[in-house]
Image (cartoon, rainbow over all chains, first blue to last red; front, side):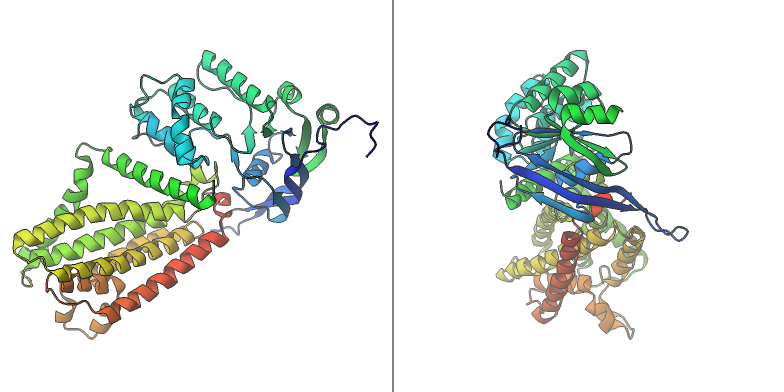
Length: 239
Length: 255
């Protein structure tokens, strides 16, 4: 390697995940009257995620961003191409996973943490921090059914925020809850992304991508059009 | 954390959560786990014991043993068929091994069943049956029964998301099976050429075996039960394999 060159942001890091020409095909359900058409939501996507970096996924509505996140999360497998994984854990920052209205806030927090991949013991240890962050100390033992939607959103966010996968997937940095909590949660996620965590971030919002991402993958019609440093890709995207 | 450890944690929490959620859905809560089989039994006692006047000796214990086992299997298999579909929201948010969903259904219903079984045993003693060491034979009988129920729930859960029409077939199939399993009559006493066919039905074998052990105080027919065990392993193995092979397809089905 040429030592005179500036260090690239990915130098010395190992790939946690790599996609090679990955494609995902959906089939509509067959009924007596329709044959069930095929639809390739992703057709040809290739890129790598290196440890410690933040990769942005940029693309218009319907370009396949959500499907791509599901492939990365292991929820669905590609129907063609390859995915290689070298990470110990991965999860999407999903809110209110598995919440049941009859259970208390505390029980829902534990259930949801475990579903998101946390150890039972770790989930119990985190519980106090989760409750404090959500600001629900006074009603954490009440049934979730008695919570307002804002309170549920706060609890859901706080649980997801306190999970610690090696690779974190985020679909839009959206604050939740009332004005105050929205600012607090947005700031918290941004902090999280800026730390040395490995993050894949999907967003429509160019300023957010600019602020947070080291590299960007531009997806269009299910294909990766361009992969590279943030500014270069955004410039091409805007043309 | 290892995947199996995570699976165990989810299994534990989700089963607990669903049991508790069910118990809190109404005022009487978990008392329904006892009341429901009793109500069910009263209906059958009234229809078949009083109106139709066909009463084997000790009809109530006879009926109870059959109904308690039947309700366990029927609820598990019917809910098992819908288990993956019912959790489609979760499937799209995080990777969860699909076999977990019918297993939660099984554990939940088994817990309720054990509750009902305890009531049944207390009732039998109060009714005048003697609790003898042979009752311990009920444990392996129920273990085989549980495996068969779990296996059936696996297969139903594995296939129903791909063929939603199966849910209707399963619900109706269970209804037919209910009348064919000798729950409120003795298959032996039927005057038909189909007795052998009816006796080959796994539900009938299980119910009959449990009655033999608990009510007659005799040894179960292990030859017939081993057939049920073999069936359970085949069906359950097939169901599990289908879920594993299609692990990432379930999230792609548009429900």
